[in-house]
Length: 393
Image (tube, rainbow, N blue to C red; front, top):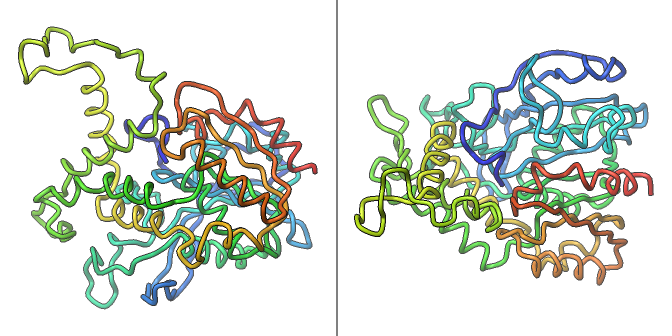
């Protein structure tokens, strides 16, 4: 659900048009486009007057509209999954596996990635999303907490509108890490005849235990007096940055493993002695505080709360995970990190067993590395050959 450790995530998005058949060096710079979806009724019965989400593509759609791949992003991410959005800018988070000649080969596939509704990266002017910070045309002011509740299924439905507008008739694959993996599973349940293959990465069911963790993630925001029940967008009001930073601190540590943290074992801050002074700190505390404060400055607290709720509403239209996936696509590749502290191994195992019980063809792959949950974002290169083989099956 996180990207590269949280400090100052480079999520700026740029503009350009390129052919999918141009040389790889030129092909890396992509256009960020905006999909205008008009009025949208949420699955909960609310109305969004003007649906807008950003997206990027690479490759060419075939005449039949059947060679498309959808990449869904993680909790704190956006559509920048591959390529560069400006010359010399950072590569997308899955750029190691997406592009010309790569495991997800854009010489063969038309790859699409879109910003979700209620994307947390609202302060980034180039992240295009519709959410609580958007202007309500009925009032001329930000929706704030009057924005309709949206679910993971709403993410899928808005993406389906986008794909329809692009002429996509079938998805050869839907995939993504963490929150993106949840979207991939939701896609499989909602549109089994539209999706050929599914690849959830570091994702499993959102059960009551995980719903509780998500509540803990968001709790500091609600405790910040500057949150004001979400009414902080007005002139002269301060955003609840302290609560938001504390929320990101929880998420940051949850998404990393003990092996990563060992570099800070028993290290106090230079010149401080926590054994003698209660106000002194350890090195891990300083790292978390600085990383989370930087991330808070590039995100929106209300959007964080709405993204939490969308995750808590994963597969909420089905009685169980097994029922949701029973009629879904036949081919699955489930990629997990054994040291993931967000989606634990037993939860991933339950997903695999539910798929097998439903008669699915299920392959699995494991991600190594010290980053735990984040291995699914930044550590995909070692499983590239497995992904290529899955697409060739």
